[in-house]
Each structure stands twice: as C-alpha cells, then as structure tokens.
Length: 458
Ligand SMILES: *[C@@H]1O[C@H](CO)[C@@H](O)[C@H](O)[C@H]1NC(C)=O
Ligand SMILES: *[C@@H]1O[C@H](CO)[C@@H](O)[C@H](O)[C@H]1NC(C)=O
Ligand SMILES: *[C@@H]1O[C@H](CO)[C@@H](O)[C@H](O)[C@H]1NC(C)=O
Ligand SMILES: *[C@@H]1O[C@H](CO)[C@@H](O)[C@H](O)[C@H]1NC(C)=O
Ligand SMILES: *[C@@H]1O[C@H](CO)[C@@H](O)[C@H](O)[C@H]1NC(C)=O
Ligand SMILES: *[C@@H]1O[C@H](CO)[C@@H](O)[C@H](O)[C@H]1NC(C)=O
Ligand SMILES: *[C@@H]1O[C@H](CO)[C@@H](O)[C@H](O)[C@H]1NC(C)=O
Image (tube, rainbow, N blue to C red; front, side, top):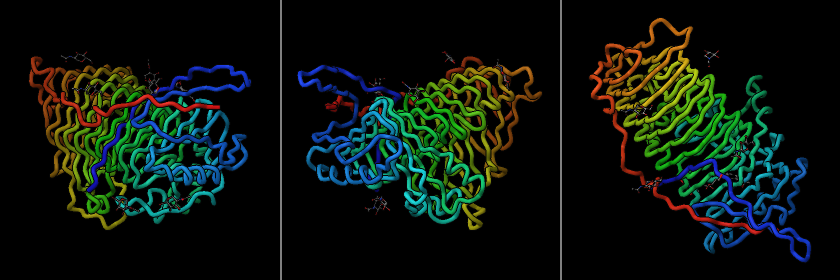
C-alpha cells in the first residue's frame, strides 16, 4: 500500500506586500504564502479566458488551465492564481505538483447546472452512495492519485451554493449522492489552508496527507476518511453536522477495503454544531480508527464533545484515542458513545461483525451549562473498554437531567471528575488526576516543513 501522509493546517492568511506604483502605472503586487512546496511556473485563470463576473462559466478555463499546467509536473511544478472576483465554475480536477492559490477577494462559485457535474462511482469503502444507491456527483474540486498539491489562499472563499442540492435532498429528488466541495483520494502530500468553505453540499478530504486549515460555515465540516498522517489545525467550523467526522468505510464494504484512519492530530479546533459533535469517530468506521490525538478543542452550543458512533455489523475498531484540553459551553452531553447507531449500507451486513472500542482517553476538560455529563452505551456482549477520564469539571445547567451519567456496557476508570461518574468507571483517587494518557512524541506529520512561496501579480 502506498504510504499516505498529509498535513492539514491553520486558518492562516498570506501576507500582501510590496504594492508599488510602477512608472507604467501598473500595480504590481507580490503575494506571499506558506506551503509544503513552492512552484517554478505561474499562471492566472485570466490567461485562459477566465471571467470573474459571477455569471460567466469558467469551467472550460479551469480545465484548460490545469491541463496546460500539468505539463510542468516534473519541471518544478506550477501555480494557478485566481484574482479578486466571483468565478462561477463546474467541477474540475487537480494535477500533481500544483498549487491553486485564491486571492482574499476571490470567490469560487459552484455551478448550479446539474449537467456540469459528472457522475462517478461510489467510494469503494462505502459500496453505495450515502444519499442514494449507485453513483455520486463528482466533487467541485477533485483529485485522485496525486502527489504534492496545495490549495490555499489569503482566506479566499469556495462557495458550494449548496441550497440547490439541499432542496433536491429534502424533496427526495436526488438521483445520486450530493457532491462534496473538495475531495482528494489516494494522494499524498496535500495541503489545504487559509480558505473559507461556504455552503458546501458536503466536504471530504480522503486518503491523504494534509496540512489544512479550513474556515467552514454551514457545511458538514471535514471528513478524514481512511487517511494516514493527517493534521488539522486552527480550524473554525460552524456545521449542520459533525464539525470533524473521522471515518473509514461502511459495514462489509469498509471491512473488505480495510483501510483505517490513523495518526490524525486535531489541534485548536473551534466548533459550533448544535445538532452534532465537535469530533465524531464513525459511524462509518469499519476499516478502523486508531491513534487520534485531539488537543485544545473549544465547542459552543454543540450537542457533544468527542463522540463515538458505531453498531453491530460495522466491525472494525476505534482504539487509542487521546483527547486533552476541551473547553465546552452549552452542551447536551460532554461524553457520548453510541453502540446502536444503525444506518446500514444495505441488508448484507454481517451481524457477527462487532466493533472493538478500546483505549479512549479524555483529560483536562472544563464544561458549563451541560444538560447531562455522559451517555455511554456500549454493545451488549461487546463492551467498550479501557475508557479513562481524568480532570474533568462539568457544570450542569439549571435544567439539567436528574441523573448526570448513564453507562451501559462500558468499562474504565476516572479521577478528578465532577459530577461523580457511574459505578462502571470507578474513581481512582485524586492523586491520579493526571492519569489518562496523551502521547508526548510527535507524529511524522507534525514535523513537516513549510516554505514561504510567492506569486507576482501584474
Ligand atoms: C495562514 O495564514 C496565517 C496568517 O494569518 C499564517 O501565519 C499561516 O502561516 C498561513 N498558513 C498557511 C499554511 O498558509
Ligand atoms: C476528473 O476525474 C474523474 C475521475 O478520474 C473523471 O471521471 C472525470 O471525467 C474527470 N473530469 C475531467 C473534467 O477531466
Ligand atoms: C489510484 O490509486 C488506487 C489506490 O492506490 C489504485 O487502486 C488505482 O488503481 C489508482 N488509479 C490510477 C488511475 O492509477
Ligand atoms: C475569513 O473570511 C470569513 C468570511 O468569508 C470570515 O468570517 C473570517 O473571519 C475570515 N478569517 C480570517 C482569519 O480573516
Ligand atoms: C486540569 O485541567 C485544567 C484545564 O482544564 C488544567 O489547567 C490543569 O492543569 C489540569 N490539571 C492537571 C493536574 O493536569
Ligand atoms: C444554557 O443552555 C441553554 C440551552 O440548554 C440556553 O438556552 C442558555 O442560553 C444557556 N445559558 C448560557 C448562560 O449560556
Ligand atoms: C513537534 O511538532 C511541532 C509542530 O507541530 C514542532 O513545533 C516541534 O518542534 C516538534 N517537536 C519535535 C521534538 O520535533
């Protein structure tokens, strides 16, 4: 198997510098940004007939630009600049050793013509589309089997104009699964940073190596799906679903694809998700989820913190999960684990395929205005084990539930947790308040070097 690694980093903004008035009265600016690689060749979408008026279709311009620039793959790579403007476009594919760079006032607008969206195969680890059986619409920005790709900007915007798709979904008119705004599969060395994703029909970052900061109002957030070595940092997400949903395939399709998500770090995430979790592990976890490190998580008006979702038939595992430092305001549940999630790909799932949930560590948590501290539901005959919770202070809401903890089919330990946890998570005494593990050594993804790159805008 190809080694995959990615860094997803920060909500950052490239600096705009050196605007000077030349004799010819041309405004020349050098835009600087940070990336895993800089490029030898540059072009602007306007060089390919692009028009940023919000009306003209730029689908052809993007496809031609990237097809032309792909000739530099083995000659120093290339960058494509998108200047200020509203750039309406249908789906296009990325290429290797390539940077797509959006000016801060550039907005990519997804086409509203369904005919501009090709239909492609469902993900192999899912077997089916999620909204409808069969194929799915291709993502707005799509890439597969690539290496060394950067999509960045000085907080430029990619607007999926998802309302069209949401309407079709609610009216049950969708023939295929809705497109994602951005998707990369079977790729490595991918960076996505300093962009705002708006109104995504969905977002996925799959099978990769990412250094990506994403500011994401009104989307389903980020889905690392069967990814190794992924880093998500300094990200602000307002979501109608989970802010970050970690996945690895669905029932028998995910079991046979067998590609886990592992070595994932999530740092400095701020999430608002009234109906879902800040970070969800599952429910599609049939290829396994392992070694996830979440640190400095803030959630406001969010249903739960880090939630595990699984069920009979999923198989796979969720193990060695480390969460350190959560600040939570107005939550329904701080801790939530669900062993009866249901939602099967089809009726062929194996009822003997039980998930293994083991080694789930939470420490250093402060929460206020919480309805219920924890709702932990393992699977009868397949308990969730090795749960460790230490140093957690949970302030309950005025109208909190009478019983703050409910636990079934779970085993573990606690220390320094208020209010007092259920009997199946016995208190180890105050001197063990630092006991829940959090790894101190870096993952290789943490050590990736970022370079300063530039684009000269004329
Ligand atoms: C994103 O922008 C910030 C400045 O706001 C900058 O410090 C950071 O390096 C940028 N990150 C990337 C990966 O471009
Ligand atoms: C993009 O790639 C997909 C999958 O390889 C392919 O089906 C589609 O035709 C490509 N689109 C374009 C515009 O080349
Ligand atoms: C892309 O990568 C996948 C996984 O490694 C492989 O199965 C597939 O054949 C590759 N596709 C192409 C077009 O090289
Ligand atoms: C980026 O833009 C969005 C709106 O498009 C804004 O809400 C956000 O604060 C901006 N982030 C930065 C770091 O400038
Ligand atoms: C407990 O958690 C708080 C943050 O929530 C942290 O400041 C403190 O150092 C932790 N205490 C121990 C003993 O780790
Ligand atoms: C506490 O949570 C409730 C909803 O459960 C909300 O209506 C209220 O505004 C919150 N109070 C504070 C002080 O945030
Ligand atoms: C670990 O990674 C962080 C950046 O993510 C870096 O600042 C730090 O120097 C690294 N530590 C070691 C020991 O390499």
